[in-house]
Length: 446
Ligand code: ADP
Image (cartoon, rainbow, N blue to C red; front, side):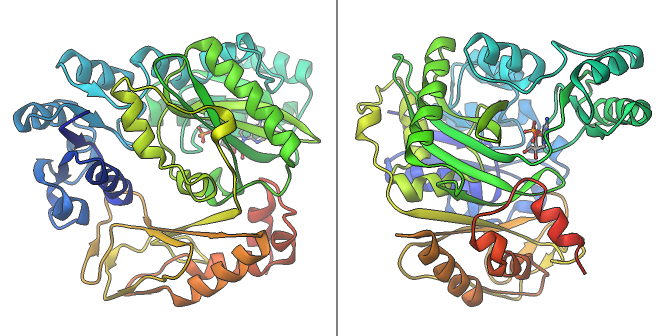
């Protein structure tokens, strides 16, 4: 087992990793930017190292500074969390080259899955169903138009290096292709320094359903069920739940088995998520995330398995020690991402939190690094808390969530709590009748 882990992240996920380490008897090293000197992850860690000024490129993306911090503090391993360097294969290689363990899959696997064109090819080889589209990158407008004709409109032009919903443009007909193709390429070039794009059929009413998997380095793979992440704004998840209201146990077992088989075939090890769009009873591979996800707690709530602990454990080379049949799903869980944003305009609202009171009670979990008096910096994403609630039935979860959202006090900044209150009071949501476009349509209504 590791003695000391460096956590190359900030905010709630840095805390989440710290908590898993603490419970495993592992010491932690926090890294932080100058503006984060008073952040909770810095206060709780055994040691903390300042790695640079506020802009992420100078601190949380500063590979050399993070490696130096790990070497100087004598850490054995680096946990990257999500975002920042978590899917950066070069960084994972650097970590290993310095004799440290990377808590994640091999750099080779990260590189393969990080490029959506190669990931899709790999998915096809491993037997996963994919969305009809171009076989690879599309370089010219003429080719893009040819693919549009072949696949049939509407189509979506997507960045091969994409992430965070960036570099994606829909073309409803051939006339819209030029702008969709040019804009997606331009956005991809500036966001990812890689303007390679590909084309897919644009599904009209899918749900976003993803399968959580866990694999050790000895070839054992299990799945931990699905998360329904269809509630999105600008292709970004807002609220997630497990199980999905759209699947029954048989469908879950079936897609779970397909994913496990695919992971065995490609030799994946570590924690990972295979994302799908789900329409008319069929699954279509979207991408694979080779890291812990923001929404992992809903899976923890229904399986009772500490995913971060398991991720750390398999990184040491330990065997899973349990099989698919040992995993029990119990109850329902929903996670609300609470952002420091205006709930109507979505304008970010960094600033000082003057009062902070989190809800409690049975099956209510809050993952957050905030406290009263803390100043939310403008430099990073606006997530301030994740509220995760479990219940025996979906209805029990909704009642508990309503109560917990009412109890949550965050003063001094705007948050998206009122948005979540509106969503969970809506009859469509209560009935589980929603797809990836539902939230944007709901927000357009006066
Ligand atoms: P990112 O890596 O940027 O998150 P994804 O490929 O995971 O991009 O897609 C994010 C979201 O964009 C999906 O959950 C879905 O809402 C939408 N999307 C992506 N591809 C398609 C498609 N072919 N048809 C319809 N919606 C899509």
